[in-house]
Every structure is written in C-alpha cells, then in structure tokens.
Amino acid sequence: MEYQFEVTFRIGKDNSTKDVKEINITDKIINMFGSLYGESQIIDLGNHFNLYHQYGKHKWHLSKGGKTAVPKSFPKHISINLEKKPGTSVSGNFGEVLTIFILKKLFLPKKLTICHLTSNRTCPDLILDSSVIDTYWSSKAPKYSLPPLPHILLGECKNTKFPEALNQLASIWYEMGPPPSNPLFGFGIISNLKYRTVPPKITFSIISPANDTALYNKLDDVANGRVKTTPTIKSMKLDDFKGGLLYGI
Image (cartoon, rainbow, N blue to C red; front, side, top):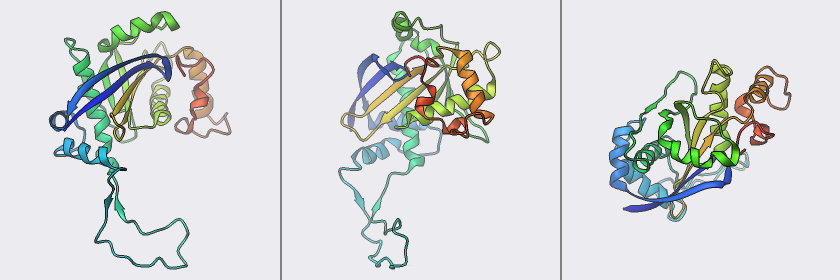
C-alpha cells in the first residue's frame, strides 16, 4: 500500500512557524527501513502499519474469547476484552523508523548521521546530526532570533504525546547539567506520529531554549522538591515550560 504522509516542521508547538510537506511512503519502504533502523526485532513492520492504520475503522474482534458473564462482584472498571488492540511495542517503532526515513529523504543530498540511544533507565530515543535541518532553522531565525543549533540534537519519538516527549528531553538535559558545560541543554527534536489519520501525519517540533538559566532553575526546583505540585521532572505539565523558557512553547 502507498501512503501520502503529511510532514510538518515547526518551532516548539508554534504552528505559525510550520512548513508542511507531502511525501509518499509505501509499506515496502516501511518494511525495508524497519529492518534497517527499527530498534526492536520486528519483521514486516510495513504490514503492521497497514493493519494499525485501519484500526478504529475496522476493529479486530476476538471471536474465540468466550462470552462468560462478568461476576457482579467485579469492580466496575473491569470488563471482558472483545477486540485486539495495537501492540505499543510495535507501534512505537513506527515513529522512530519513519522519523529516520523522512529526515533522510527530505534533506538529500545531505547525509543524516543518526543513532539509537539505550540505557538501563529511560532516555531519549535518538541522537542526530543537526545540520540536516539548518535550512529550515535559519529560515525561522528572524521570527525568534533563534540561537545556533548545537552540532547534535537529542531526539524523542512519541506517537501522540508531545508533553511526555518534552519531559523525557528535560530529564536528560538536567542530568547532563546546565550550559555552557552542556551545549545540548534545552535543545532537541520531537517527532509525533498520527498513524491512524487519513493521511497519516508526522510533526517535527524543534526545541530550543529561550532562557537557559531560567529553564535550568525551573528544572532544579522541581528535581529538588521546591515545587510541591510537581514531584518530578517527568511529571511536569506543558504549562510548566511556558513563560519564555523555550521558543514556541
């Protein structure tokens, strides 16, 4: 199958900075790039994409699951499951594989250097050479007086959860320390994929610090319990990053 993806680049969540492109991607390409760049051992990722794209319109019902009556003593939140759902361990690979393919495709002839990251704790998904987005970045610089990008960017891929992805980046920024000792502080790229929509959509949000000192102080306050309503950096809400800390937030 062939899909016409809608690809959007923007600064933070500021849609006034967005550039929208279209790119055709087939399930065969997803298969090929899944085998090359998928983090997990999943065969035929493109076939999964075909199925998961249709989920919600054509649900995969369980016909052999039985029809046992739920006991009256069961809690109200428990019910018999009558349909199969997409596996998050599979769908999580869509964003990473399509992120790598689309960035490689759209910014030719520049070569994209990109690597998966791993840890015994949670960490960002990717690290990539920032030069591939220099043209887009420089075209938006006059609106915000944007700082130059560091040579590499941390990347986080989430199918729909932008705030969760931002928290993941913020956690590693704080762990690495403030600038200037940490030139990556406040920078990153978040890709959000909506694979069930027609057409499928992927949005790249480029993150940049507007006030790195204030941003670090905010993260430090949260990490050290000085913000009682927010126990950890990973529990921060999007509103916590507003107020001139990051461009486009």
